[in-house]
Length: 264
Image (tube, rainbow, N blue to C red; front, top):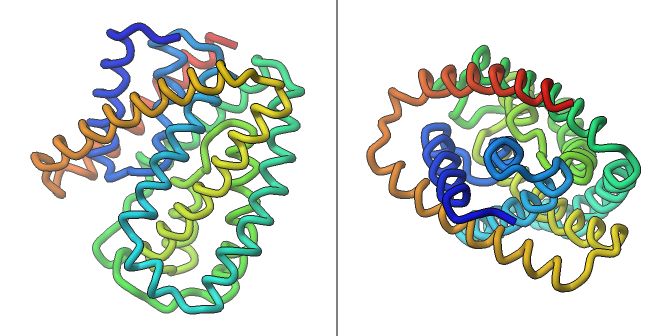
């Protein structure tokens, strides 16, 4: 599916870029590189990326088990019942659209998301004040609690990404919600949604066990390379570089959107 040279290039680029942006879960850029460098179709890229998201969110939750154990009981019940139910329904609907639309439609959607992500990175930045704990707007908090899993589930089922970059900006900038709590909650949603999407995509497309295993093997290997590169790069990256890096990456995404448009 991917030759070793393309494999290494994608792993290194995604690892370095996400290290500058401190992104561990929804590495959206991977889909673009699978399209541009590996030459996969949009649907193949999404199916491979779902595994990378699932592995990434699983390891993040395992590394944050202490934080998860401190979550209030009512929230734990919510994370074990309401969140997965909303995610399952939304992923199912998104998967139905994914299966029944053409690659051209998916590329149009990817083009729009790439532009929005690029603009978001150029225009919206978090300050130290944003990262401090603050009293969340109760209305926004309820909106995020319900629509977060719905939006992410549908988007992951349809196009692979959870829209994390946009959701967190809304929750923190508008809702005054705590960054760490929002990030952890979004990781839980990604875990459920990517798992359900993997299952539904393979069941509804009647993918063979051989095809599933091959995709898993490539995705797991790619994630290991991305994660290793991320950890090594993070050692040398200073916080004062991150804003400039975010603007650069946002600009590159806008340029990448042109390539996506030309593929339509």
